Image 1: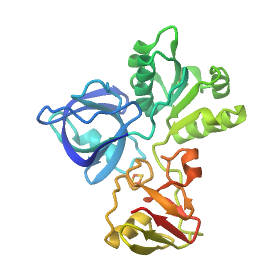
Image 2: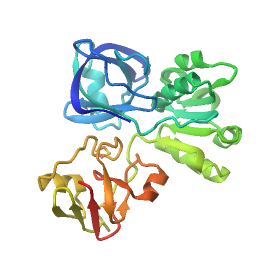
Image 3: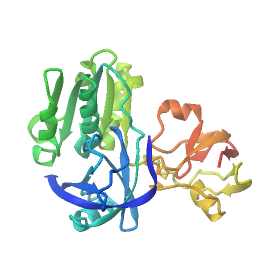
Length: 320
Ligand code: FES
């Protein structure tokens, strides 16, 4: 699902401290117009002082008047979250793009949601949506301690006999026993996971051990592929629509080279996380380095995220 393709300005309507170092922002149209619709799992881009960052929508999709995002002040961030925490206040204007959704809730009778820290945000929307569809779920939410775990109360209010919330503050209860939690998931349950990289790696490994990797859907905050220049090689990129062929060097990105050549490309995060630059592949073998495409999408090689991905064959032909 894609929303508005062009950036637009919204107003910060309300700011709430949800937990330690986590604030939520409610964003509204300055003229009170309805906002582009979205579905659970969607994110928007926020333009923050020259940086573009992606935040999951965690409000109510049935409320067309406002978006809600939650922002963790991450000491390891490259500036976006720090800017949001110090500068965005009610009445401030912020440029937005989207929503887009690469983490849609597929249909199933049962779900297991595994959230770590601020990874609760897309899964909160998923849990609400799964409940609205009348589905069963279990929501396991891990964090450093209760004070750092945003939306725990909101989650608890969604709980019923068939929708169970398990909070796992590490300072009280230790780490989540992932093997046990995954093994207890009902047969056929889809597993959705979002959180820090080490949690995602652990869930992927546990799903591999338990033979349930095909039921796992993850959303990553950052690309894991750092693409060191050592060992990279050049390759050609042919853009059929533009009638142009360029050479992408070992330390260049396809997006940068195409932009320098005057080819119109659509890019936002430039980090392989937002999906904006997804481009159809007509020939060649992409070397996928994004965190957006599913394993099946990667295997199909039908599209490529040209901000971070490269090419395994000498030439990549794009429908661009
Ligand atoms: Fe965001 Fe490429 S621009 S994934």
